[in-house]
Image (cartoon, rainbow, N blue to C red; front, side, top):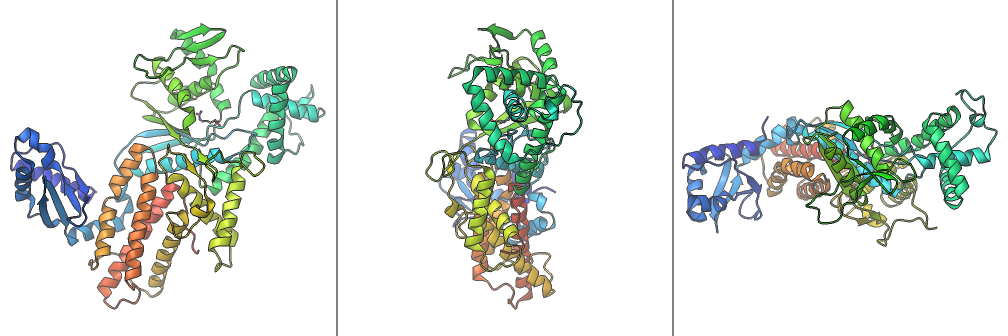
Length: 581
Ligand code: ARG
């Protein structure tokens, strides 16, 4: 089913042919002057040049052929050639009822692409810290948005599970527990009774890496272990598997809370299986150069405004680089799947890395030009003081601590009346507070974490939205208990109802722009706006006790529409609505 606004635009376009105006498309936009109309058409200004006429004249000619449309309640012209349109109630009601029947009507843009999304990117044996929050939140929300607009997606966590730090951690374990079966000559892959926890890893990793950095012979030993690991040395490989498993269990626990999930739980180790194939290919293309003992690919272009250094494939010490890993990942993905686009949701400070990797991919022709590689960098979440987020003792803030702190705050501040499932509900609210605050600024913008502000019930917050939705939901439940039927809107009586539906009508445009900008900020603003409008309406009308049946059922249907739609939008953001609050 075509969206009503688009149908109306086509109808106007057809009518313009009567006055010999043939244009590609008519674009109606929500009015900048709501006092003059709901929508405006600005086409007359653009036509002035080609028609050699003044915009006011053109506007009045346009109006002469569309003024009797039943879609309009009123149409007028304003200087220097704006056409202001007030939509008829029938139009709005019909639109609302279409949406009530099928909310996806406002989302499906008919974009039928296959998009691969790389987000999350936590590192094995390292603490999952606040820096990983944004990649997971934004990545998952974009993934959900892609599906809502009609795309197929494949998501991959791209675990940092390979490389020399793994050798360092294994060496540290070996130094502490030399008798473990993993390190014995006759070890043959059998399960080992070795109790390793995530907390152990969080202590082991920094100790191991500091030791290696401070002592060249330890570094050398770690390098050797890493090489053997890459050759699948039985003991090292089994221990590595164990380390990955322990890390992943913790990562999965936190991601589950955040409503983050992946189709593929692959890691850099999986991409490494394609390294030889990749290198053979790149050598065959003759684009690898030797430079000071390293192997590089030149990626600068004449139009560059700043210097883009060559991509280092193999470092002078023989180690395969992070860039090579990403090339191998692209190699694997483009060989396994037929992709239109590949999106990376990674800290914007990694932009240069991806510029180099993307250029090398196209230059070597391992990726076709019509497969788009897209870097969606995000800004930093800083501490309340605007400086990098740290714990009180100056360390990085583990994500699990942050979630716990916000959960406690929500329990204290906004849940006096709840007696059952307090912890669970507090968690749901906390996730909403964090996620909404995280998705509200434009993706690439930095922001400061502010627990009081983010959990405020009366602000532009996740808690405010949840609270409003819970209230809508309980209103609907009460109506059902009273056996009131409300499956469609019959009449519009107040100005606020019109305002809500006009805003609802604009949803598809917001969805489209969010998809085009790879950012959720407009959706967050939109949720706030429409929820506010609904709350104004709610404050003004006593829905359940209204005597006029037509009004009452229309108001309930409107409530259901806003609730369903808010739920759908919150779902895209990865936010759940609790039953009570
Ligand atoms: N593990 C990396 C890090 O913590 C992020 C991975 C981003 N994705 C990628 N394909 N490189 O910095």
